[in-house]
Length: 111
Length: 114
Image (tube, rainbow over all chains, first blue to last red; front, side, top):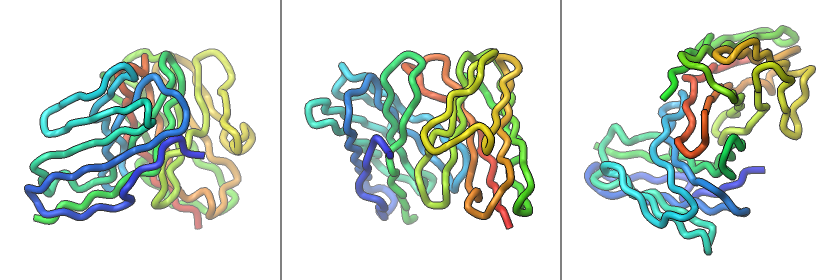
């Protein structure tokens, strides 16, 4: 079964708006990562946040992590049509441990 | 980060046949991972491949159906055997030297079984 559940399952916004996706997971983690997948192709790593971090930024991306609630959010600011993709959260327990993926959010940014 | 070349990018196969997917990495990596992504779904780990040892399979996946080879630190293959339409999926390989820095994925193999 999947470790993470994401919501919403699908999100449609206008270009320039912000997009927020949420991820909840079930067991303790070492790291939480976010990936983007365009049209069923390979995944692109966006950002990694460690369990002892609460917030992280990378360009237009902001990730928060609340380990007490076992949840994370990904915010994309000033969205662009090129941000249209599926976004997945993924958790691991550190070291060479496997990564377990959430259910994903399909984002559509309308020009 | 590592660069992965995955082949083929797509294939249409007859049921009952087998397909071997290859992943070549431009640097030596300890662990390689194989995932399946069924249509409209998330990624499910099939197995973890270490060089020089047998692959470790996740629940629901068996070696007879998905044999994996890992002959060296830069290469791995996954074979989908005796295919049925239910095997139609995207298959992805992934590498990560250390999870603290994220994983790199191949571009995926889109398999359709008819």
